[in-house]
Image 1: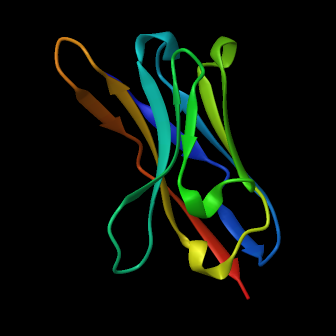
Image 2: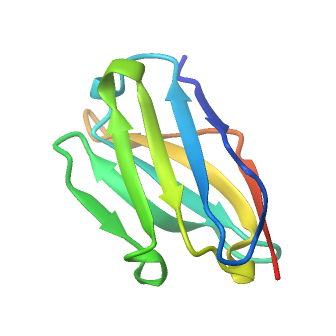
Image 3: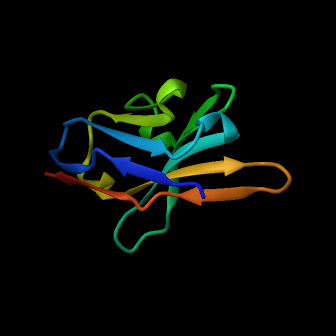
Length: 118
């Protein structure tokens, strides 16, 4: 059973920084990609950042240059460093892991709340 546990959320002032962590129950090498999504109040869940097993990354346009996704294979953990946070980025942030074979399978963490005050 795959478990993803997020941590690091909290309350921060606009312009501040946070680091989110996602610890997997097993080796993150078993996943083809891992990422972070967020869902604000009354909004859909959207991709924030994603990193493949090969290290390729992609970001939502709105966070490019401010957010960085990284992985520590030895700790089976993926991180999201968030800088210059904006109030509109208040949301629940979810960790996601994907396996592509034999079919696309996605796993989700329980989410961590990030609140950015103005």
